[in-house]
Amino acid sequence: MSQVTPSVIVSSSHLVSPQCPELSEFEYGLTMMNNAFLRWMQHCARAAQVTELGSLDILVLHNVAHREREKKLADICFSLNVEDSHNVAYSLRKLVKLEMIISRKQGKESFYHPSQQGWDFCQRYKEIREQCLISALKELNLTKPQIKEMANALRLLSGFYDQSSRSAASL
View 1: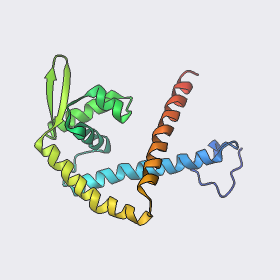
View 2: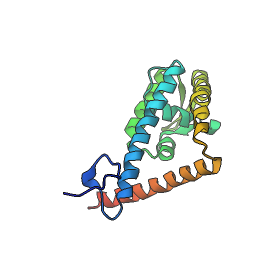
View 3: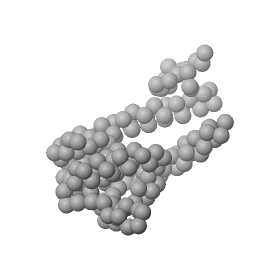
């Protein structure tokens, strides 16, 4: 049984490595952050008067709206780093049914773009995000370069976890 020093804050003490207990602390913080972020998205959507969307649906809708270019399923999965395309496909069908996005068929491929209702939702979501999240973020006294540095670190670490996932899958 592993011994964890009391100053290490983790959710799974049995996973703590003596070589790097900080990784377990990071993973616990990441878990808490992820769950808080998913909850935030749903509450923000509800405040924007849209109650039918789950967190993946919201991510997919914002990705479809990104840069005002049509997207296909593979593009969305790639940019969101979602391996299970069935979940994204389900979200796309749901968003089409809710008339938040429009599907256009070209050959065998479907392309998606936001409907006016989808754009209106994205705008309301942005306004609520500005009001609730951006204003609260100012209280942390983080500089824009610090936030950018954290974003870069998270993207780099996602690659680390992707590579480790591939290694574990080959065992």
